[in-house]
Length: 184
Image (cartoon, rainbow, N blue to C red; front, side):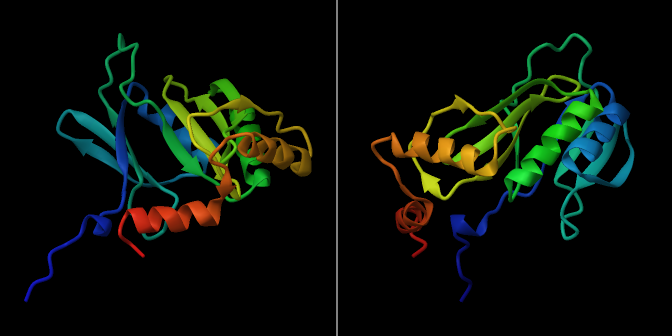
């Protein structure tokens, strides 16, 4: 008997975005976010660059030529990348500042995460973030100074999370989500 696949069997794999300057964008994503170019080439009228941060994934991001020069609005709200520590978040921020291609750089906390928002050289918004040990309902966003100590940054995020009526430890929220999704 064949078992019917469940929705939980689906996992996010990769995304592609149209760009104007493929090489500049490939350089930005390599230097600032740490992607490795895994392949590149022409397919019909478009040129593609494949990038990954996971050796088991051929690509997690595809840059595709052909974004019109007069395109001023991106239908992609943001592309988000998760890091494991404040040190890594600060490293990405430093690299973005050094690279010079990023604009609109905004460190923030959501209580449940600490983020750096920025725009890549073609105006696409990125979020580089790390989870905190807390859950609080969203949307919620407050500027944060990543030049502060780890303790001060985490204290500000925790205070913001605790100020919300649905505050709880992240582990408790995850357990509740597993139940809600029928995974426990």
